[in-house]
Image (cartoon, rainbow, N blue to C red; front, side, top):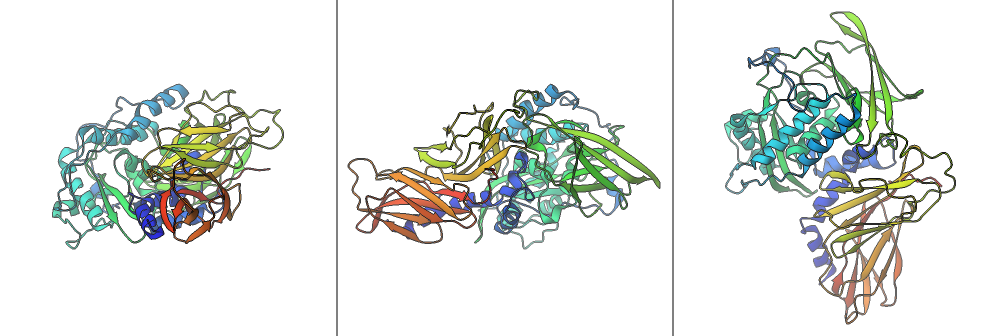
Length: 567
């Protein structure tokens, strides 16, 4: 096999190109563990890369300029459903997260449609239920009626809208007949739906509440999900792929959010995200918002504190027409500080309602659902010396991924986070012991799996380098063994080590293949080398015989300057 053939295999392996898009979107996806564009160098640039690569995209939210469209059309009153939760009860919040949020993300869509032939198809009933359950999870946490139901009639049109978007590879609330698989019903549904490319189902709902992107500073998608009078929503999803020269969209969603409004519930008075009370850190995003019907926020002030310390923030431009009037802002804070429950107090002033200035204050306490929140994971006062977690290395063994790192004396433990197909997961149920220096992921997802080590003990916790493995890409035979990549906290250099292919393999050299940037030829006795990195960089090691590739490893990738481990 030639190097060109090997690289083509990588790009076509469903695919490294697609997976790189998800990695490029790390600034968006990793927000749940507190890693934001403002907190670590390089991630703000990745947000632009993600948008350009079109791996995950939210268009502008659907906007209502005619207030009559918000009039109640459903006579039944909105009311609390089975998920109603008291967010001042920590255990109740944890139970809801574990019983609704996490399971919903695991449900499979089983889409029956197809872009060829323009077949909208349908998804499994379980997937539709999981999608609406995710809507109700966020509404319950916000203190809203959580009995949103699936509008099966509207879902037929939303399914057509979702198909149009993925078939054309473009999002529009006013699609015209030039859209592939166009239908008038789908076009109408697009005008009243949240739309997404590159994500679908429950994960799309999560994306709408996160509401990332330069065009979504008004958090309009979130505001429709959390609009108090909502009673039912249509839902359409695909898992088709749209390929572009920059990358690929995998799936689409159209969630009908405008229409089927009921009467406004008597409470809560305001809707905020994150809401007052205990909130899992996984659902606390870089953009915070506060909504109040008919409020004038043009002269409003917002301040935040964490304990006695002020938290800087940036107010976002005001824009109305997405449900209730809203003000949004981006705190300058690391929301991964959840070794213990961490409260943030929000104060709003000069919010004018009926021309009367009002003030509001509430506290959001970030929690880790996997811990008790007390002193069990508190920062020890006696820890001294360098922290562990440096020199993170990644390698593959079959279809498992191995992580290794250096020990230290300044840490109390570790958490391991994985990014796969746009979903961030914490892989350890409880903190790893302070002396741990290895971790094996025996059940990685398909495609690119990316890992970061959260080092507990420092306050706030610190993060290791960010490394990835393209699981299963390696050859069936003649594969160099134990191929390991480390960045060693370097902004521009990766270090590699390996051992020879299994006994009986025929080879006379190696090539270190750098995706998109050529190769480095190495002799048969060499078992280590260095490679240059610039932004996201991926490498594989190939065994060669007479100039031909006869075996190869998984691709290993690294994102320099992600980690923030201090000396």
